[in-house]
Amino acid sequence: MTYNVSNLLYLITIVTFILALRYLSNPAHARRGNQIGAVGMLIAVVVTWVKTGGTSWWALALGMLIGGGFGAVAARRVKMTAMPQMVALFNGVGGGAAALIALAELHRILPQPGRPTIDIGAAIALSGLIGSISFAGSMVAFAKLQELIKGRPITYPGQKVGNLVLLGACVALGVALVAGVQDQWLLWAVVAGAALFGVLFVLPIGGADMPVVISLLNAFTGLAVAVGGFELENNVLIVSGMLVGASGTLLTMMMGRAMNRSIANVLFGAFGQVTAEAAAVAAGDGGTVRSASAEDVAVMLAYAHKVVFVPGYGLAVAQAQHDVRQLADLLEAKGVEVSYAIHPVAGRMPGHMNVLLAEANVPYPQLKEMDDANPEFPRTDVAVVVGANDVVNPDARNNQSSPIYGMPILNVDDAQTVVVLKRSMNPGFAGIENPLFYNPKTVMLFGDAKASITKLIQDVKTL
Image (cartoon, rainbow, N blue to C red; front, side, top):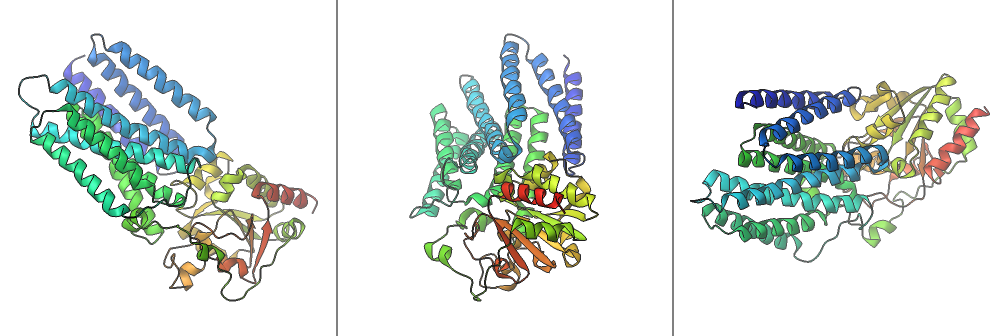
């Protein structure tokens, strides 16, 4: 394959990646975006396969078979509730691949006369450093989301200083490599130290901050891949890596704004480390909790004009998305207007609630982002909160001493009635009491969300 033909095909691949990113910005077109991106990746792999020639074609074929087979099985078998874990895992694999490319490229260059040029040496050091941080950090994020380790922040004395010293040592080793110290073990030390930093970097971050962390690590992986493109002189890697890096960075910043918290606070604040005192705090205003039976709630829903469902991570844990859709269908058959209010950081990854409800075939027009949903609550008869907590906490608006003060929330307390489906009165991720539960407008329906919604479906059918 000639140089010009391969570059033309690579250009087609770059265009498909840009189009895929464009389509992925809207749930209604996301499937098409995935398909376009997959076609572009197939073109890139095939072109690379043909260009390499020689004896390495079989290694590419084997890699395609193993990777494609694993991806196909995962796409079919992994439940939508476990999608955050899979995203973290796949993202980590990308970072690890970038680090391995750096090691392989240094191994190829060192036996040659002279020493690596400064630009290639810097690219190798950076991809090894950033790729390893992304790999190890993503594995910890996966373990937290999979509940293999505790989701609460794990801290230790001198954590921030220790992490800074470790990162500084890794950077110093990388600078030595770029300066001309021709020792492959130097890069191995950078990779190992960066991996340790990735672990220590993510451990102190709370499980509910994982959407921001996954987004940031995704940006790291994109940057590592882009730098790897400079090592290999491959334009596809450079452009695709920068697309991922730029989009991941923008998404991280947007999610930080959605929580009214700086990225530094998310990464270094150990937010969500609940003390015994915080967990034991009772309602400050001496309010009382009103509980209701499923029969009572079913009557409210069946005779309402407008109902808004507010999903949270508890919905994903209970795997109740299909049941919510069935309940919504019953209400619509009775003439009730139904919609869903989606908070930007609800769930465990960006867009988690959108993906979860899309799996249940909820019509896209019914999914309302926060800015569109909040004006609807004053004319809402019943707001049904399913497994959400901090994203509906009025303290974010009213209590300046609250840790979440200033965070934009869904104003469910503007509805005529609020029904909260919750297992118990335990505090949410922030470890603070939610005054919404004590609001005279609010009734609590205690129990597993899936079981509660199933009972609501049965009761609504009899009305």
